[in-house]
Length: 550
Image 1 (spheres, rainbow, N blue to C red):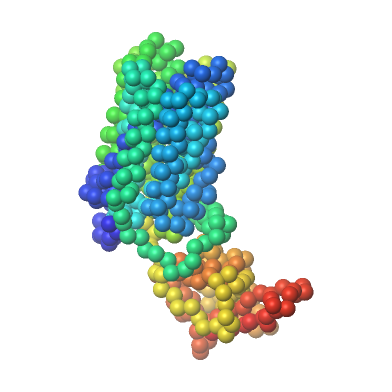
Image 2: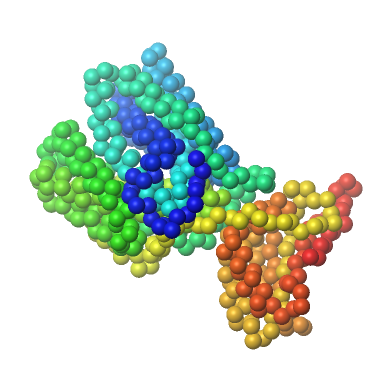
């Protein structure tokens, strides 16, 4: 099912509206089953490692092996998600997860168990997840209506945080009741569910008439676009800081239950259920919150809620009070993550969304990992209370960071590229990889229009650079003061065509505004050139430099 029109109401009526889309509903539900299996597997593999190895380091490496691939491979898998059919990328990632999980189960069944083998298969399963996740997140905008993207992103967060409340406990019950092998086999079966859903579901994605980008160019373009987008940078920075500060709630919860509340597994499960309840409530109410409050205000409230949760956990010895505090923390957790996730989705055009999402998750995972280490170190070397109080203080600083890094208010996604571009005729038989291409545009600007022209050219530099222009400059002729020349490069002829295909209708309106300031009888003159080296080259490669004027 393809993404339809952008309705007049930019915000989805309710959080559950995207579930009316059968394709999204099928894959979303299947993903929850898989997430449940993954959480069960985390518990199972950790317990398996603890039973066969006496090394605390090996046990500690189990969660690291599950999160490291997403951090290491983020930029690469994001480029793959944008450069290839996302449905096939999701299918490939899920296949890796199924095969690796099945092999781990088979080795355990045969008695071939080794700590490094366990880490290896855990790492491989996580690689499949790292390949699947950016493609799935990027596909949300292709599957649902544009106005439903915020609700769909919220559902992704609500779903995982709901499953998080029961997954580890269910994994422990299965291991205790039926054994490690059964738990691993059940996990493998859960990985098959989304594989079947992706196989059945098909959705239409606008295809590009141009060849795929090279991985090097795709990665460069993704990093450059992210670096140039103030909206995405602010969302990544605030999300990373929030993850670093707030993860103390979940990372230290086992210690809180054991040392401060004097509880056991039942108390831990009760508190996780409280966290999940708050998360679900916030997710269901997210559409209402977004209509009434700005994104920055929601982020501030989320930080305050999680800070209050941390402070309450530091001071209370009551399980009931702790459960209420965790419900508040769960609500803040989902509100914050869905908010920054929505901002990244909406600020990213479809051609680059896989890369921006992957970069976002790399920073988020890094912040959460760093926060777990920081607050764990504080708790070990000082006290649990100090770590939770420090987390609460840090969350207030994250809220205050909105003064310097405000989240932008965006109610609709980036407009789609117009995809309408007729390449100017050229006199040379250019190949797709011919280049570098030098582009010059000459304007005639009267002195009275110079100030307005420079304002527009600053905007044009941003537009052209973010879609692929390199080494953009603006020059003024010292002998003919009315003559201004815009110059930039692309690595190849295909990159020049791709740059123009990425421009939106709003970007092209800028050309019309510049034309009003132009004083020439004819439109601004476009000159395309191809650079050639001056060093000696083989005879077959000799070609006269080509200059085309249009």
